[in-house]
Amino acid sequence: MKQFTNFNDVENLGSLISIAIKLKQNPFGFTTLGENKTLGLLFFNASLRTRMSTQKAAQNLGMNVIVMNLNNEGWSIELENGTVMNKGTQEHIKEAVGVIFSIVTLLVFELLLVSLIESLTIKKRF
Image (cartoon, rainbow, N blue to C red):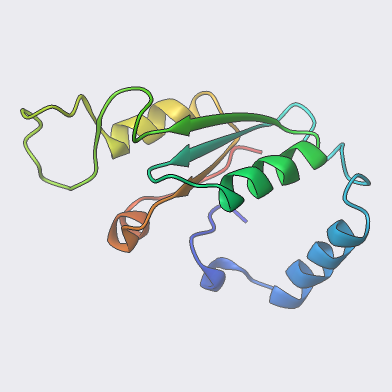
């Protein structure tokens, strides 16, 4: 799967569920799947359960994890398309994602702006 933004991106949901069940039954049995891969987690809002469970799942798969809280770490990111960036944002999300993909293998971000998620192409480099 090259991108996953909703369940319509899944070709075989039954197969995905079967893999999830195997992972749940043996959470440390697949540590080589993430070997030499880095997961980037971008959070635009405060997060507890999503952040910790995703980070733990990636570590169980043997991945390195880089987490950024964009609400208080790094540059201010512009989220709207067509906005003139002269008010305090230093980088647009589309350019930021390109930079991040040069560093990470897989990118996950939690954001409540559904229209933005749908406008970005999220890819993995495996």
